[in-house]
Length: 147
Image (cartoon, rainbow, N blue to C red; front, side, top):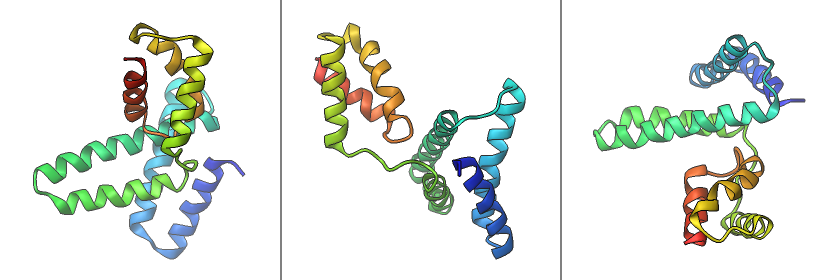
């Protein structure tokens, strides 16, 4: 069963259970996927769905930090709940040790030795880590290793 099928099944389950908060978030996911399918005239595959979910989580984390800095914890709590629901459909997050190992392998594979070659390293790591690690933190770790 694909992730999108699981999401659609959860929409139906949430409707039956009358879980409005969960249903709202799941419908937001399906609406985003459908919008991309219509705009680009494609059918979203697993890899693209992961990048969509990853982007949605990133947007919510940004909103959480802004709401908290503005003293609106009520709105931040809504965003936090949405992040938890979205993350249910994402693969298990990579540990720091796994990320460091990936970076070491990519650096060895590309022979990168300076910041100019960071793009090559990211090109190898991005497909493996998409949806499983925060790309901002990942690039920070790569910069630290190449400096």
